[in-house]
Length: 225
Image 1 (cartoon, helix red, strand yellow):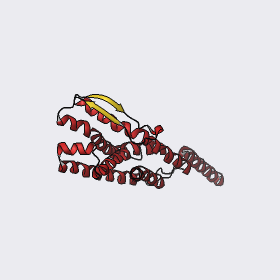
Image 2 (cartoon, helix red, strand yellow; image 1 turned 30 degrees about the horizontal axis):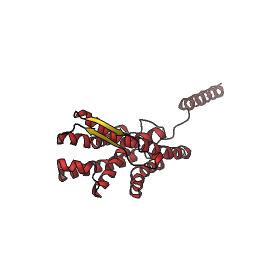
Image 3 (tube, helix red, strand yellow; image 1 turned 90 degrees about the horizontal axis):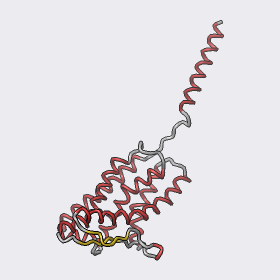
Image 4 (cartoon, one colour; image 1 turned 180 degrees about the vertical axis):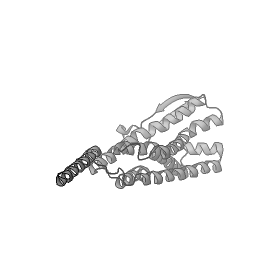
């Protein structure tokens, strides 16, 4: 539990704090976003992961027998969700089903580098949510599963290793984790000093300038007469 908490702080909370500290949003807005977004992450992380398994199962002709999308946190269980499948008799079918969440994770991280740019939105909540959904959520997924795999947990990555081998699995994991780190650094740098302060009404400033010019011209005409 402590290890998972550290992973959440490292991959979800810390990048969000850096995003908002580097930005220029009001403190009240930042505080609300930092309270809300981690909660939304918790409510979306497991469903996206398990639904990815379900999509992989369907794509290769298997059947989803049972699925639990959200851990029963009201019963004190915060990290248990699952999908049970049937009809996956070939190793390649099992590989597609097991690896689907991680392929989707990598696709999301690549998409985050394309989508998350300052012109997309100036809203602090929208920017933070997009960062969490397409960049930080898949980063947590890959980091959490990799640490569990190294610690001896027989989960998705362990089953993938049985099919594709140790070298192929670690090549995929190292490349994916490097991509995650790169995306977080690049995106946070993009949002430094964002949003830039703008005049409340630029057209009003132009009107004031025109009036000053008109008054100046009137004075010059009066002096000449």
